[in-house]
Amino acid sequence: MTEGPVLNARGEATRRRMLEAATAEFAEHGIAGARVDRIVAAAQSNKAQLYAYFGSKDALFDTVFDASIDRILDVVPISADDLADWAVRLYDDYLVRPDLIRLATWRRLERQPVGPLLADAEGRHGAKLEAIAAAQARGEVASGEPFDIMAMVISMSMAWSPVSNVYAASSDEAVAEHERRRAFLRDAVQRVVAAR
Image (cartoon, rainbow, N blue to C red):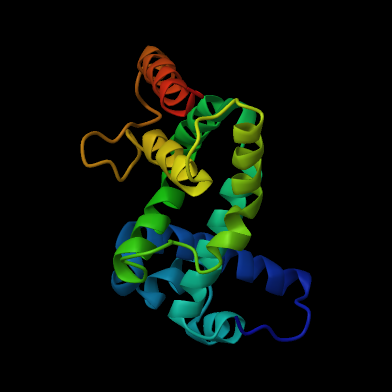
């Protein structure tokens, strides 16, 4: 990311508006379909500022994507002693911020079709994998590769996400429906990760 001198308050506000507009644009249209014109119009800015702050549309996407991953890691930290609860919290986060899961899907489709989604997967997932391994050592989680267990729990949490191949849940649905899904998800994850 290209960064000039420290931004003043107005510059930081403009940059924040660009990131918000870009998040919505990339989530809706992907990397190839996103249009810089729409981003700067929504941000009440111009292309020159966008390129001065971010360098390119691709670099802007990377900044948006990194921020979305950081948010998920901060808002929904792993709880290796209760992976079922972690899955439910991820489900809830997808309801609140469906754009974030869509960004990850666009990255998978357009940038990283195979292998880990994140370039620094070990660094980003290191604490999660260590927590799962520690829970395995205590006999609380099934044996197996910690990465595979993490991947399975995340995949289960996405069963009703905005990118589901079966059914995409919405925060507008009845509370009882979400409670039913949460209970089912919690039980299913507990069964999958239980030590045998």
